[in-house]
Image 1 (tube, one colour):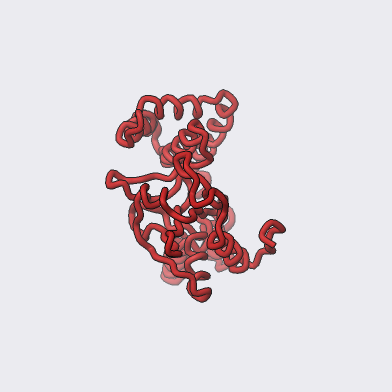
Image 2 (cartoon, one colour):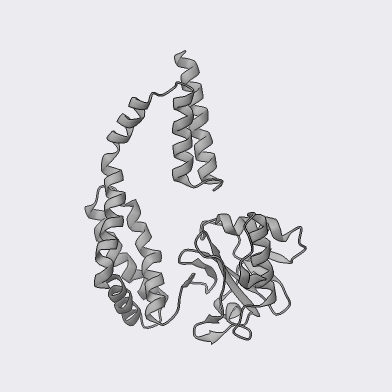
Length: 258
């Protein structure tokens, strides 16, 4: 019986890891379903599950504590202030901006016993830095000048020749579920999509641009660094990608898509 329970628990555990790694399900939902499956199979009792959660109370308290702290400090505009000051001190140099982010996150990571959620400060500050400059979001780029991803999204461009490009999967980007859904839907639709790197300069010279993410869905990018992309309006390729995405997830098309 113990052997069967051990094998079952191992299968469920690695199944949950696979769901999280492939982004088939949100990590919280995957973990919840895994726990429910173990309870259903009588490998784990409800009391044991609650006890295990109790053992992890410090990590959970830290996670939710950081969320509460960010929400509490939001009205003070402290994050906007820090982002603005970092942009000013960076003087247009990416290395200086990165050092500013590290200077803020490192002391917090050193003091807290488990500061995984502090990693969220980097994209948060990047987005606030963009808003301090009058933009809605930020695209990040490496030292080689190649765009990696957005602060909380994947970056896409449509070249003048009609090629749709997004960064290829690597340690430099997160593999978004929206990104994957678009890649899967675009193939049958015979859209020319390339997974490759592109530079900041190529993005600025693109005919269209857009970003994708769980919250952004498919959002057109009409300006980069204050300059219009194409004619400064959402283009036909972006609109078609939006339609394909809504159809792929089985959602009703918004009225503005027609």
